[in-house]
Image (cartoon, rainbow, N blue to C red):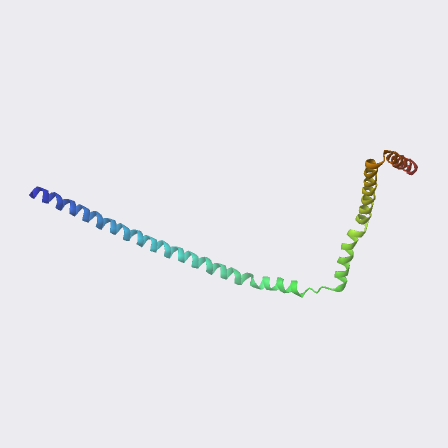
Length: 137
């Protein structure tokens, strides 16, 4: 019986020491986390301070550029010029090309509708288009 009590006491002591060691290791982890967090905080503070310093260096240049942008005045003449340019794109050469395309589409639509109704008219339209092409050449 004394032998059994010695074994239980030994197991108890081993378990107690293991638990104590595990708790001590946990404290070590906690301490390491606190140290690393402090280092990260220091790095973040240094980065922020360097950004503030750099911002102070470039602030006058940025203010100058912004004030130059806002100081430009938009004149009525420049707006009219831009408006004429834009309308010229739609009504000038491109507008003429659109009109030509529309007339060709109308001719094709007419030819298709005549195909559906009266084949004799299609031949007349084709002959007329061919004679017109030879006359222009």
